[in-house]
Image 1 (cartoon, rainbow, N blue to C red):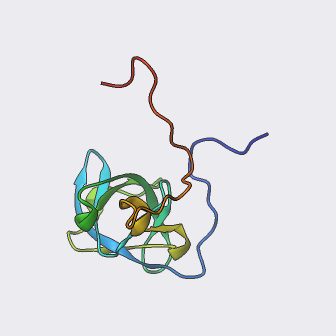
Image 2: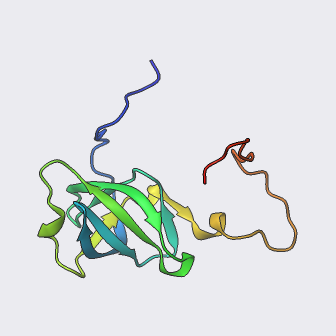
Image 3: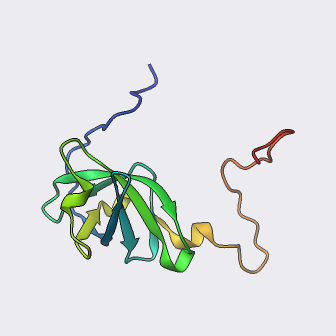
Length: 125
């Protein structure tokens, strides 16, 4: 097979966690976090409390690059409304990408990115 699909695949707690950002508010059952670091989390990256207990997984990333936010799907038994504004949430530092990955290339250097390709006829709209 090609691995599992869906659900929370528990990789166990990481060796260390660093603050990702602070809880802003609950929205439709998800937690909204304001990033406090200049790196971007992977999609589905596990989010933890400081004691490394699993809170949920990154669902969507949005906002300005300088004021990024993300929504976190709570893990089973976790309620988004149980958090208070300003509560710090944590991430495994290995689950972060450098912000430069999302900025235009400087100096005309052409990096060979992954994926790409344009939309075909009848694209989204």
